[in-house]
Amino acid sequence: MGKISKNVVLALFLAGGLVLSSCSNTPSDEEMKQLNDLKAEVSSLEKQVAEKQREKAALEKQVAEKNGKLQQCQSDQEAVKKGLGK
Amino acid sequence: MKTNHIFSLILFIVVVMLFNITPLFAQEEMTKDQWQEQMTSYKAKQADLQAQVTKLNADIEGLKVQSSKLDTDLLTCEDALYAMLGVTRADVEAFDKELAQMENRVAELQRMSDAELVNYKDELAQLDSRIKEMAQSKICLIPRYGDRVKALQDKITALMNSIQKEKTYTVGTWGQDRDCLWNIAKKKDIYANAWMWPKIWQGNRDIIKDPDVIKPKWVLKIPEGNELSKEEKSAANRYYRNKAAAPAEAPKQ
Image 1: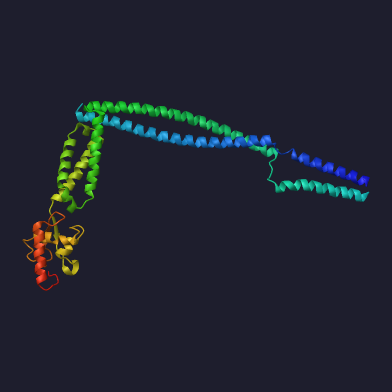
Image 2: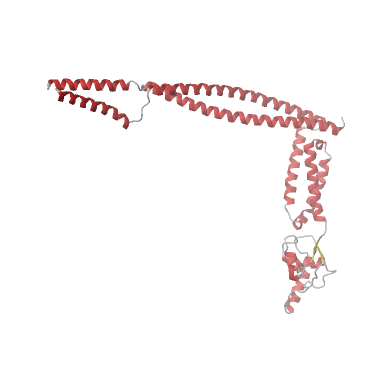
């Protein structure tokens, strides 16, 4: 009987050791929090980039329109000069 | 002795299995290597995105500066243009506003039938005279205004022509076209109203002696207007009284 319990204790130690050694291969809660924070930051940055791209596109369109108007005005000046016979 | 060893081995296997089975019921756990891999990948993404944001911010700033410079350049250019013409920005804005209002009105008039348009003859004459005055303005030297004024002038002229020219209708056969004064007046491009037939009759008294008798190939004048005059109404009443007194007959041709 004493031998049996000795063997049982040994088996439990061995099994526990094996389980504990496998547990230490997973990241800690602190590390998981670090990863989740990083993911959240990346997601927020992606949104920021999309928003900035939209803002840039709108500004590019605005600039193109203004350039067109300016060119139109310059050609109007030429036409008026001609019309006035200058 | 041997039984003890076998018992210990079974216990060992059972304990290990119990510990290893529980994660199967729980969420799949990440290994440290996977964590490290994801951290590296997300850090690279973060750095890339931050660089993109920085670049986009710089681009946006540059575009804002460019846009504001263009505003100034445009104002300067327009001021110089108006100064050449001896007009102010307010003059040009007022001209543009009036022109736009006239364009809208002419578009409304263009949607009317000739018969409806006759009621707006005076308005068309006013529009015509105003557009001629506007065509004399120096603002019309600016091509976009000159072109718009010219186009509007053409439209007004076309509208005036369409109500001034005398409309005619060549009578077809009863067998094929079912042409009688009632049916002619009912046509969409004539009056779109059958009760207007006395207007055609009275407008063609020289050839129509009896309104029930019209002949194929006659060219009838279609007088302007969308309602009957006093004379036309009384002629129609006379006709209906006579008709009531006499027995009904089919239209003759």
